[in-house]
Amino acid sequence: MMLLVGIAIVGVPPAVAQDNPPLWLRPVEGDVVEEFISPPAPWASGHRGVDMAAPEGGEIRSPADGVVSFSGVVVDRQVLSINHGGGYVSSFEPVESDLKPGDAVSQGKAVALLSTYNDGTHHCASPCLHWGVRLHGDYINPLLLLGDLEPSILLPLNNR
Image 1 (cartoon, rainbow, N blue to C red):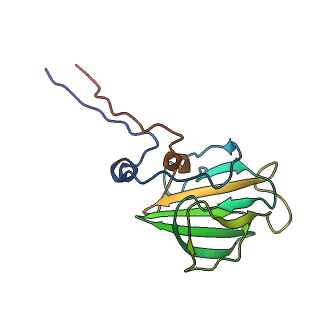
Image 2 (image 1 turned 90 degrees about the vertical axis):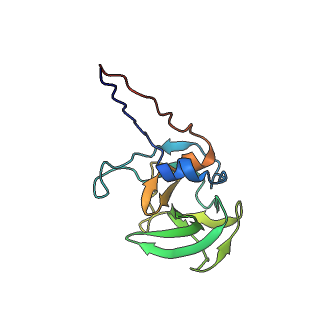
């Protein structure tokens, strides 16, 4: 008789489960209007972050301590990226910020204001913040760091 064990991990990269980073704060208080969708491959389509409702011109707060790693225009929008250490980098768009690479930021402190694309349109049907998080270069669901999602539970599969 052979026992096969299968393991499925859905949405929780191993580094998140092992490192147990401290909980982050939401960058805005609005509801999630579009969920994270992991791409099946790095080059494939997906939604590499979450969209959160926020008022235009509203404050965006740093979810954790860090250092600004990028502040500038990407294609048609202003983007702010913060390196939080341990391989975690968060990015926010579209925003306006006076911060520059190398500036230190503190958890919960304002780092930007919600803006629009260069043509005045929003990322969503109504004003929202797109918040992405990368762990060692791979996009993960930011909600995992807020404690809003339960980690996956690994169960053995019995096949006979």
